[in-house]
Image 1: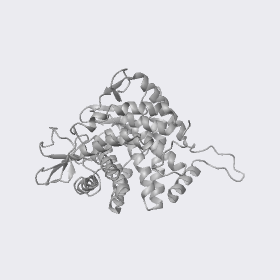
Image 2 (image 1 turned 30 degrees about the vertical axis):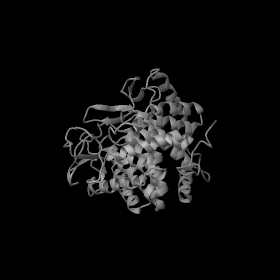
Image 3 (image 1 turned 90 degrees about the horizontal axis):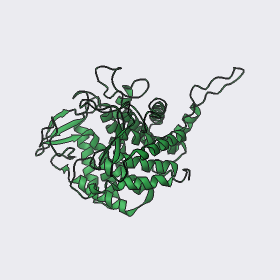
Image 4 (image 1 turned 180 degrees about the vertical axis):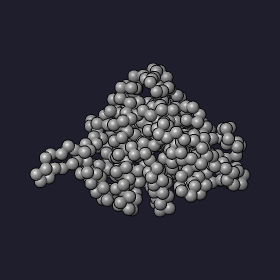
Length: 417
């Protein structure tokens, strides 16, 4: 942690240009990044969104189309349902405002049925860990813990021991060879739910399921240059790899930006949970190929191999996701130079998002210009709830590190009350 604090201390110093000798005063090249101001901006935008949600309903905001101020609302079964309550928990942590605790609890409870019904798909981690997981971390409410543990058991029912991974879509999806076993890169994020449950009263086997999924994915989801496939199809009986394809990327062999982001975030988390150095090494390799191919402003196009760059849509959600992942990777890497580089890149990503991608008066989301599913023709250049979630998560992580805290320390003790 000491090295991490030193890295971020140096970043603060680098934020200013200091005149010396008899030279005339120089204009600062880079103003200090005001994290608190960005969190307050998110606070204000979320307050606007609250006013737009239909009363007496279980609606959750998902996205806003370009040139619109209207949210599209979804129910608890949608894979993105956990991002709005998760964002509210982060706002409670970042501001200390009890209003957000109340609202976060309200919207989290909309997702309670997911803990008692059969698994619809693999996204239970996104849904329950982002909502109730953050809620339990900040409040210690035992009811939340029970819901998390039940949901982890539900997610485990999708694990296929013949393959060694969790089934992502237990239904017919084009090009997925149903009823064969499909696993998508996004699924790496849901492993955190299993790791947490195994260490907090759940069955210890959940840990082994998560490790198996990470290992099999590492072996089959990546090319020699460490770019990732979106989907791998396995024979459900033998576990043999049938094919590797894309669903939301440009092509089967392209690097879909958010998919690579899921890999960076996922393997960083797996190293944190296991302490196994192979995951740290792998996280650094999948991060490096992403960083090496970024445009100068550090905000990726929706796919790094899309044919019409620079006239392709960007994906702010991938940028926010990776910024958050890099901030955690900063605290885990053993290489001080890499830690400095990750910290520098992450902060620059957040500065770019804050300066040029905030929604401000255009709508009540936090960020513009995310791309959900371009091949499917949906959510292209939209504001999307998961971009907002990872943006505020990254801001809070940066704030922790700037103030010498570890990433697992709550900010409530320093938030304004």
